[in-house]
Image (cartoon, rainbow, N blue to C red; front, side):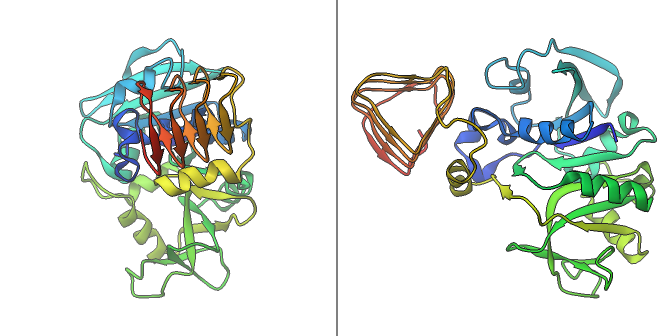
Length: 321
């Protein structure tokens, strides 16, 4: 499987005000945009051709500092449609296509909007606001061997157990009990595989969720499932989980090598991004400081997220600055 669709069009309302500066999937996580962790996981499986749908602050995706980097973006015509602009760039040898949605098309509409790009291929779909170390190879292999239109990656533990399985554990029989067959027992991970045959079951509306197609497939016994319980899975779509994940996962240095920590500053249990400056006498604890941010000498921060390009002064606790 060489194609992956990364979902990036959400508004990120739970992460405001951070998402007033960047779209949610571009929020820095261990010094790089969150969605690049999903991109890397898909790259590790052999994916080299990526589509990303965008909506909120679409131009930021092409920004060399806050976006995906210097990708030498150009406009494409062959994949455009529905008034949606398409940009293409090259990132570390892989093709990235940004499909802008002037109007949010929802999950099903977003897939239909990239149908020409999908062609007859299978695609790995990955939400842009989750971080995981799950074994995605198990998902891809199961999907390819089954020949089913869709295979969902599931978790056994979690608070949103909306997916019900049959006795084999390999087919979804209901979602949120919409079919009246069973209450949910498993959590949808936000990662799944699709074949082009999915479009045979997706309603024709331009703006549509993918759930009606999933329910129809479940009725027909054609909605596959695989458990991905090994590894970590984290939804970083809200503030507390975003802060907590920086403490839980050691996937890189907390302090970026290009950050400047001035002598006399105190930094404890905090992620400090590249080109960030922590001035002398500043105290930063249990916080996340974004790239290029500046913390003044009189600042005292605890459990803060510093996302602004302005200098931060004063005492703050549990604040987004």
